[in-house]
Length: 147
Image 1 (cartoon, one colour):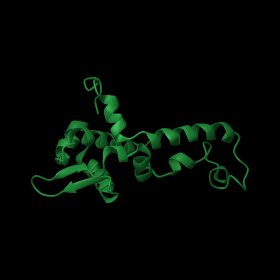
Image 2: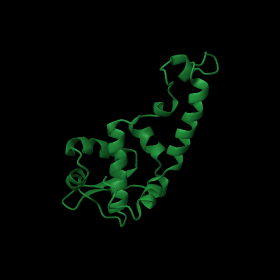
Image 3: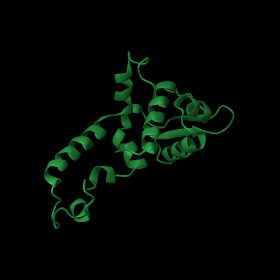
Image 4: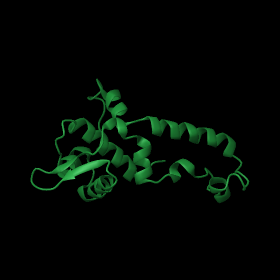
């Protein structure tokens, strides 16, 4: 499962995609308050995404954060890879080292065959789902969706 850090990163990117589409920057305190995420924790998450060029930031009284890329270029896979690492998509369900890192030479775990199909579906879902597609899916449901 995704870490809370990763879930917060995804929520923040959706929030910024929705609220800063015109290029405006949104301050960390506003994002933090609106999403209910502690400001120092959110700041670390957002700075990591700035380093990876997913977000852009501007300092100063009118500064803040905005998307650093077009929302259609930011996939959930990109976010998970940055925040939680690619192990989320590659590790063995049972935590067996040979299964996850040496499939060709090691013996796969007892659930490898069935779980590898699910991992492929998960990888495809995360790779194909972009911030833009999530924003489109939200159209008409803003009152039901609380980021």
